[in-house]
Length: 419
Ligand SMILES: Cc1cc2nc3c(=O)[nH]c(=O)nc-3n(C[C@H](O)[C@H](O)[C@H](O)COP(=O)(O)OP(=O)(O)OC[C@H]3O[C@@H](n4cnc5c(N)ncnc54)[C@H](O)[C@@H]3O)c2cc1C
Image (cartoon, rainbow, N blue to C red; front, side):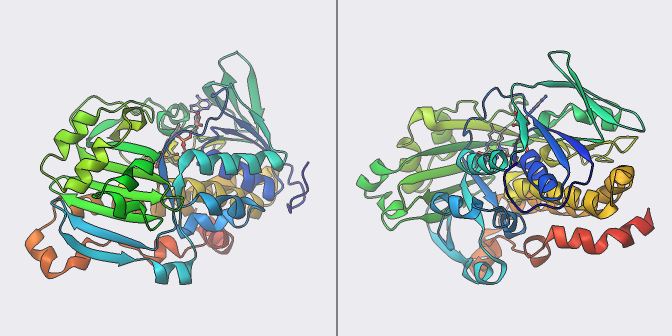
């Protein structure tokens, strides 16, 4: 096993299903706390997929705790400290600065989901965590003494605790809820693109987005917003466009988008936006439908031997900018509760305390996704021109300046007393 700082072995065996940010964080944090981990993912190979993703200070602080990770992320992440807002026609409205929060709360980490994921995956491997790919988990089961998973191959694996971190199409939900829940359309979808920025530098309308390095701009319209981020010193461009959509329910990060569909959505908008869309290589455009799931009544199974974390428990709208962060917090707090409970016999207690610590915070933050979207999409422009800062993203200390690991240790006993 690689020589990283870790607590002495706890004797607790954990199976984690899904090697996204929720599962990887749970695995790394369990390893730090001395629990033994088996991490499974159905993908035969974990490719660097996706595009822009954000980690607030509440989660990026953990990258800094994992030796070498922060350093590896530094060249990959977005470096602008300011966000420029425009109305849909291109009139400049306001600039939001993040300088002060970076100084006091630490850095945010915004970058390519696949690239950041590869860095964290490499760290998990370097720690010696057992990772088995090509393992499609088709069923979950549990008794009072243990929990387990069944793979598509028929193989059955058991542990003291199973963590279902398999994203929005979680099968673990069935064991936890007792029935299969169905997603509902949210009424919105996101066009997403990420591509090399060389051509943007040659176009006089788009040049300013990339010529001075990284930049961050937003254009706000009725029921549509368009965000651009130049990254890697302006060498690459990422944009997302959230718009009304009443199409079918399809959550797929690789579903191809069509340039002409985006152009219809931004018809009559700032020519900068229109050119940005026209200059997007068609094969770098994806169309992601946003679906909605009602908050679950619980994240834990009847025997408290199986837990849902990350998107499996609580998918977030992108406008919350907290989906990945809350997925990471879940894993950090779970590993800490297992440690604090003090041993294999206390796994169920730890799981119940974990849920109580996480449940309210997660759902309170989840709601901010709708609030921010409505703040932009239903903007009262007369009021905004009088108070431009009302467009700013809410950056709240209780969400961002928060150490969920320290909080778990500090609040564990009191929460246990309330169970
Ligand atoms: C391919 C991909 C691309 C993404 N791109 C972006 C992006 O560009 N921007 C963004 O903001 N968010 C993106 N996301 C979502 C984002 O990563 C999550 O919203 C957030 O990080 C929470 O992560 P999670 O670990 O809960 O879920 P996920 O990141 O969805 O990870 C779930 C993991 O579970 C595995 N899995 C699923 N079912 C099974 C099963 N039955 N058995 C075993 N393993 C299983 C999947 O292969 C996946 O690796 C993407 C997710 C994926 C899977």
